[in-house]
Amino acid sequence: MRKAASMAQRDSDMRKKPNILITGTPGTGKTTTASALAEATQFRHINIGDLVKEKNLHDGWDDQFDCYIINEDLVCDELEDIMEEGGNIVDYHGCDFFPERWFDQVVVLQTDNSVLYDRLSKRGYSETKISNNMECEIFQVLLEEAKESYPEGIVVALRSDSIDDITNNIATLTHWLTTWQTVP
Image 1 (cartoon, rainbow, N blue to C red):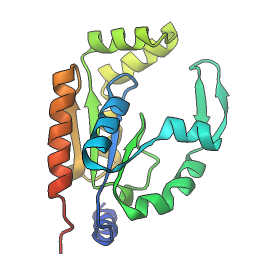
Image 2: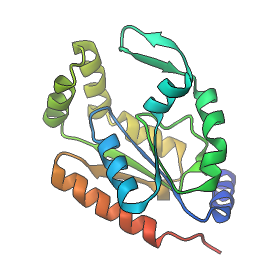
Image 3: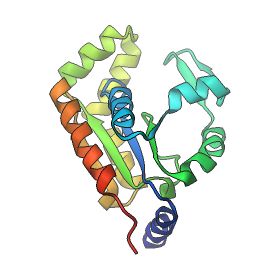
Image 4: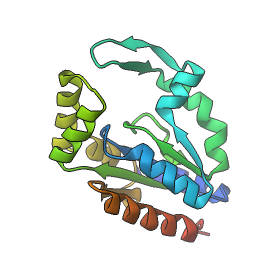
């Protein structure tokens, strides 16, 4: 892990701007947060779900969960050069397949179960999809995935239950982005 962390540090030393990954269970506010943060900071927002659709970076459709089966290798190949530049806010509900060196901050948004259920229901998700996503949130699957995939010091969990939470998260992350600098 130390070797990987030092390699990640070397890569971030070459970037003039940091990269942030915003992850969390569907319905936790990733796209809302990432879009507002990108607008506030003039960073590039990359919504992986949209990218997969636009560039056909998938291996077909999953009828059970009503979503594309992303091809993680194609996604990483598509993003490699962009991520090296820095200044990116990546938005996706998974995080373990991205190279560790790409991110300087990994944010896991978390939402109260009753709020999350309402958000997913309003999206018209099937009961199977809602149940699967609720279980992921209850068992903190994405927080654990982030902690296992990235250095401890760059993973942060933030509440995302309300507009006030999202506003506070954007302020916190904007401050972090504007004060970020590579360590000599």
